[in-house]
Image (tube, rainbow, N blue to C red; front, side, top):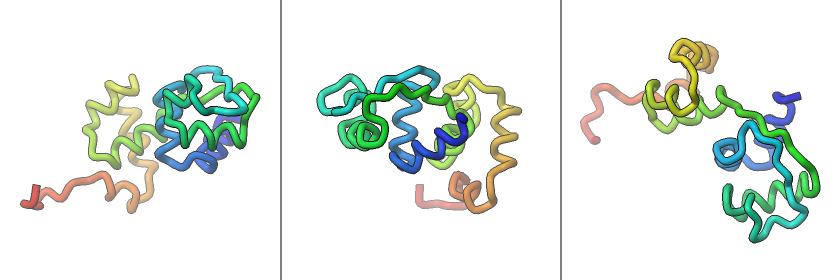
Length: 120
């Protein structure tokens, strides 16, 4: 069920919106108001994402997953270090590297820096 809900929520919010949601309320049973404008949820994830969530799940309680693998991949793509990601997500480095090993090569390449890039 969690994998299906994760996929549904990513479909509704996109990667960035879903990341905002799980960072704010991951692991919590969360009420989605029918109208999100000015609500606590809107303050946590932004008005636009809260409205999208309300349009699909308004009036429901969602058991928002922690989605550590998704979050780890997103943070990796943002260029964050393994140590920072593991500390933030309270996961072991071994678990983090298992997640990386399961990524497709193109996705993995987006998070890697060019060792010889002299522009930054």
